[in-house]
Structure formats: structure tokens, C-alpha cells
Length: 141
Image (cartoon, rainbow, N blue to C red; front, side, top):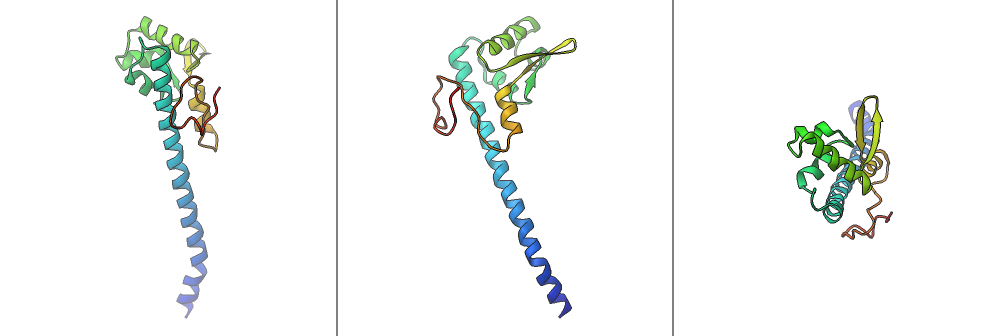
């Protein structure tokens, strides 16, 4: 009888934990989906605004971490140092990245990606002029 009572006492707690795990899984799945949508949306935006520098590898690099250095492009074989600098500055000019000095080093941060990663909601502000399947969910800026 004691064993049954102990089991019954644990059942609400176990259900609570399972519900928490399920909610976390669903939230994480939605976050990943939003990151993929932002990645696709950014790809379309760069293709439209900077078709000469666009490559999937460049876009993919912008989503490996929420900031980029000139050396990241060089190491990935996307461009030589001078060209990499030009590419990143052009991405700043169209609003995909923002240049930020950190000591002697220049970082190029990806604000939309940082915002998406740091907020509870799984939404982002899409780039103006680029209509996507998810545009109705997201707000134009």
C-alpha cells in the first residue's frame, strides 16, 4: 500500500515535468523554424539588393553566429581579405549587418538574428520589399 501511495504522490509531478518538456520542445522547434525563415528571407533580400556578392555560403555564414568578422569570410573561402571587407560593408549599407568596433577588431553584427535569438517570441521584422510566405506573420520595417 505504501508503494501505491508513493506512486500516486509522484504522478502529478511527473505530468508537470512532461508538460514542461513538451512546451520547451515545441518552443524550440518554433524558434528553429523562425531562424530558418529569417535565413531564407535574408537570402532573398541579399539576392535582390546585392546579386553580385550573393552566395548561399555567404548567407549561411551570417547565421553561424550572430556576428561576423572579415576573417570568417576569408577562412570560409568566400573572398580574400579586401573583398571580404567590401562585402561586409555592402551588407551594412543595405541593413543586414551593422558595423561595430571592438578594440582593434571590427565586428559585423546581425541585428535581426540577435533579436530573434534573444526574445521569447519567435518572430522577426522582415526586410522591406521582400515578400515571402511568412510575410503576413512578420512586420515590415
